[in-house]
Length: 357
Image 1 (cartoon, rainbow, N blue to C red):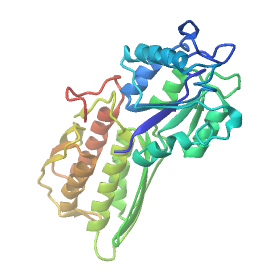
Image 2 (spheres, one colour):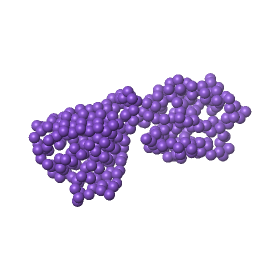
Image 3 (tube, helix red, strand yellow):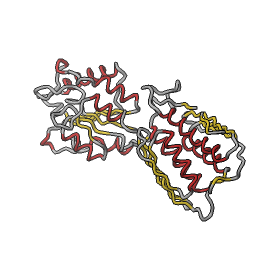
């Protein structure tokens, strides 16, 4: 799994920048407001930390190495006491005129780390208080977040947490085979847009029910080999739907995880769901008809099995009724409803004693 990494500047970002721009005594160390609580919450949401800092002239008479190391150890010990640790710490000791390759905004310090770490570039970021930090972000291909600066687009630490942890959970997924070409996009925190096109009218209507009752926006476009039959289109779109929802869920911090039930006219569907990270599926139904529109009833079970496997979820469905259309629709609506409950953010912790889902 790709890592979400925050490349964090030190002076002016974690600790206040002194007037002489040199932290060479413990008395000069003053934490930036809200940095501790913010880093703790970011860590809970699965972010890893890397410190990247220019420290002009460390090791010179003007800035003895021992003075720097004493202050650095004090700061790291303080952060560690709050369970905040850095995977790596990169310090450039050179002066601006030295012409080194490691001074920000150059990325020389990070070359080996970037080559050896599988980074999610869309969800990682550089956080710093200077233009050079934003230029470093451009250099390594991740977003830059300006903090504690006088400019209008600067954020404080709580705003950084909101931006990184509480913005919309969005994902895209494309899948191309010899049988289907599929594009899917989901936003679990918005229900403004639903666009479904698979070439199977009744199936499109059912997918719309999942998104509508799930409370999320969904775009799903499929070009499939319908001249053969509907099997590949339904199976592959189920795989894509489960995959894109799983990707949007991210680390699952704070989700409800479980969900349950729905009647529709004379039919009743009973659905239970657990976003456990383990696929398990059970389906019970006796449909009076063999198909509704162009969708065979046998593909209903196959759709939900494929969804369960790609979503890595336990999904149990049973439905009773007399009208096949109503029975199938009750299943899709119910799955949408349980997804709404399960993906909803209701806490700040991971809903598992194992520490992973």
